[in-house]
Length: 149
Image (cartoon, rainbow, N blue to C red):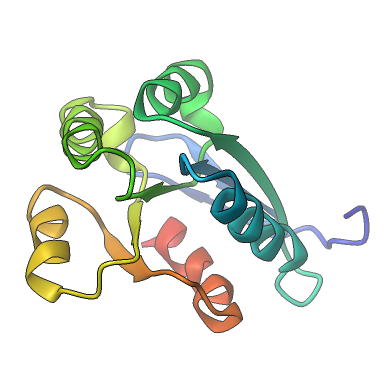
């Protein structure tokens, strides 16, 4: 990953700076195989040598909140699987949206459920977007856009 070039920084709405040469993603997925698959896709996408991707993987909503509390200023995107217990996913999203620091971080929900009405509930609660698993490389390559909106 040392071959990534340096990009320019952009300011978040909370005043912190995003280093465009590095994208740090918090991945929350309780399924170890799915987590490994998504993490591998993320880390292999250095965005044509322009961006380095760092993934922090956690297996529960509680661990995601702990990681946010520890590293919120350096996390650029949150990917959260809806196949956590649904209630935990909803509570985690509500918690993120109520915190003045966390709500500036784009949250993208990951789901195996293709039902639009199901996923729209998460968008209404504040999620930035959703992706349906299994993910394809094109979806992963476009994730960086969410960190610069």
